[in-house]
Image (tube, rainbow, N blue to C red; front, side, top):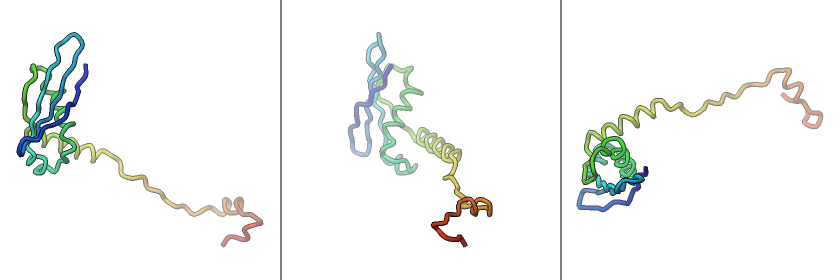
Length: 119
């Protein structure tokens, strides 16, 4: 089984994302998911995330249907933003590096006659 993203078409303030669902031994199903561009702005979701959001909607909700045209809703956007926020909260922060002073023993071992005394 394979989901293929075919591209999008701009229709006024709507963007229509096209997908084909291809399964061996079954006819190809064509899905079109429309999204109002105002939803992306209202939920602070990047327009480049549109194909991924629509693909997720097809694979999780729409495979039971025979295809056709569907809509990306505000609820879909809110669920995406909530999942993104949760993933960001679980992600560890950048590693913290602590500079440690060398011990007297380590300083004596690393002393070189060519460097001179360390202060």
